[in-house]
Image (cartoon, rainbow, N blue to C red; front, side, top):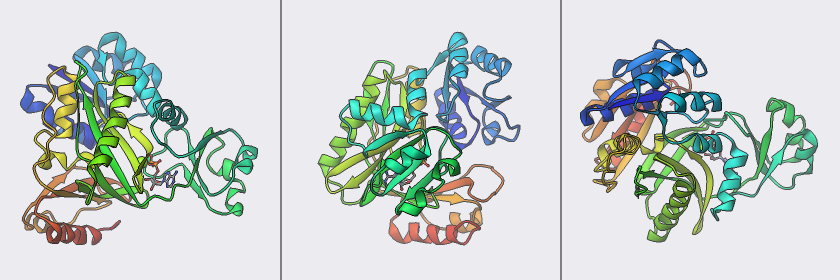
Length: 358
Ligand SMILES: Nc1ncnc2c1ncn2[C@@H]1O[C@H](COP(=O)(O)OP(=O)(O)O)[C@@H](O)[C@H]1O
Ligand SMILES: [Mg+2]
C-alpha cells in the first residue's frame, strides 16, 4: 500500500512513521527540499498546485491525504483523477473557509459563536458588541485575526486584515479551550479520543492536558455527538479535529481541522492507537484501532527552539519528539509528551520556557 501526503511537515512525518509498521510506504509532496518528512518518506519537491508534481504523487499513491486544509480545489480534483483523496474534496473545501464551516455547524445543530459574513468596512461598523474578525481563508496560529473590544479597534480593520472576505464572530467568554479528535473508516465506523484541554501562547498551541481535567461524561458525549454529525454529513474518511470552547456545560465549536492535529500528539504514547496510525488505517481502508487512553498525559510543544535533548531525556516519563526542523521564531520544532504526572510536565515546561520563544 502506498500513501501520498500533501505537505511534508511534522504531521506528514509522524503519519509516515505510523504507516511504516503497517507496511504502508509514504510519499510526501512539499515545495521545500528541506521538508522534515523527507527523513522518513519519499519526497516530491513541487508547489502544491504543480500539475506535474501532483500527477507524480497521484501515480505512486493508492490513496492521497493532506497534512493541511488549504489544499487548492484544483489540486484536490487533479489528484482525484489519478488516485483516491481522503478526506474528500468537500471536507477540505468546507474546512478551509470559516464561513462555510460555521454554516455547516449551524445546519447540524452544533453550537457555535454567533457569526456574520463581512465584505467591507461598512459591514464591520454595523456589528454590535465585542467580536473577533477573522479572514475566511488561510488563517492559522492566530494569524489573520483581530479582536475588537472597543469601537476604535474597528477603524481600518478591513484593510488591516488585507481587504479580503472576513467573518465576524461574537467574542465568546469561555472558561477553557478543549478539542476532540475523531476518526471515521471507509466502512463508516467511527471512534473518538477523550476531550483534551488546550493552552495557547501568542496564538500557538503550547500545552495539551489529556484528558481535560475534571471533565463530566456528558461533555465527552456531546463532543463526540458533534464530531459524529460532521463525519457522517461529510462522508468523511480519516481523522478530524474539532476545537471547542467550554462555557459552563456548553460546548461551542470554534473550528475544525480535516487532518491529524497538534492537540492529538499525546496519543502516540497515551492511546492504544495513535491519531496518526488511525488516520493511516482509515484512509487505507483498514479497520480502526482502539482510541482508549492508556494514561494521563501532558503534551508540551517546543516552539522556536528546543532545550538540550539530554535535559529532556533525563526527565522520567518525558517522551521527546524532535521534528528535525531548523529553529525559527514561532515555529513548532518538536513536542514532548509527559506520562509521569505534574512535576515532570512542569519540569519540561520550565525547560521549554528557557528557549527563544518560551
Ligand atoms: N469567537 C471567539 N471568541 C473568543 N475567543 C476566540 C474566538 N475565536 C477565536 N478565539 C481565540 O483565538 C484563538 C485562535 O482562533 P482560531 O479560530 O482557532 O484560529 P486558528 O486557525 O489561528 O487556530 C482560539 O484558540 C481562541 O483562543
Ligand atoms: Mg484554532
